[in-house]
Length: 343
Ligand SMILES: CC(C)(COP(=O)(O)OP(=O)(O)OC[C@H]1O[C@@H](n2cnc3c(N)ncnc32)[C@H](O)[C@@H]1OP(=O)(O)O)[C@@H](O)C(=O)NCCC(=O)NCCS
Image (tube, rainbow, N blue to C red):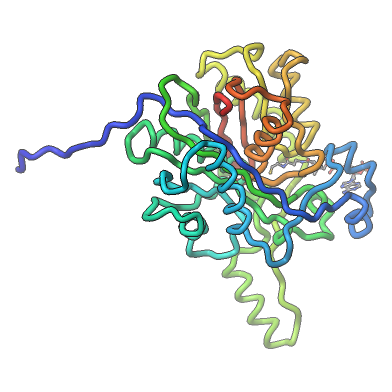
């Protein structure tokens, strides 16, 4: 047996978010443009979800394009050059290629040479999963500066005749750079999954089922289908309302932070009523700023938390250097929460 021992890297003692960036597509879609196809109203959508409008990407604007734009902002905000990034983690469920992943393409476009680059699929919790991985990579010594991107073009996967999803989703990208820190600035992540509920938010058909449908349609001269994301709204709503506040509380406890110590609460932007219910369950003092980006952005899945963060910092709702609790939850079902120091 060999007596040689493996050298293992040692990383930074702590990690932090160094800068965030966001990209919102130009086209604004108000509720009124969507209601006719689903027999709904602007008032119903506002009352049941808090959504007033959302952004849709242009037809030729891709997940990669949006990710690149948000990443450039995040890298500038972090005070680094793109060449200092050595890993790119891209969270998405709407990159329309089974392979390759979007992350290596984004890395190359940014001028990042030889970066570790891969996609993760953790839906609306993707960004918080990415922050957890990035933090562990920086502390474990496998990377120094990790670019974490949450990006979605959900308009490509939305059935505009589906009453439970047509008005919910939006497009956009958010990004953050995670790097070494002298002080603790990313708390322990509380995360997990429940695959028994996978059907509550899911792409309608698998690509292989669709291939068979398309073959049948070709033979009969029928129309080709396209798989939208479906959601059992009430089941997801109940899971989020009753299951996610305890996860958020555990993230606070794990970091040794009390709700009243927070400078911002940045939950996934899924439904304003879910956000309000979490505030109540966490007994969050009323003066603590809460992300409510959903009103103008709707649910952008992996992009929702970094977009909301970027907005709160840009508009001065949350202080640079403040303590924020962030929690993502969605298809899988999966969730992840952590306390972070805002850049
Ligand atoms: C989708 C969602 C907004 C629907 O709201 P809801 O209050 O659960 O709606 P329900 O399905 O219970 O329907 C309530 C009523 O509104 C009606 N309704 C449903 N969709 C409607 C629509 N788009 N417009 C108008 N009325 C609608 C229903 O017919 C029902 O009418 P009734 O009371 O006369 O029977 C909500 O379930 C939700 O936000 N779910 C969670 C989404 C989420 O968190 N996703 C995150 C993971 S990514």
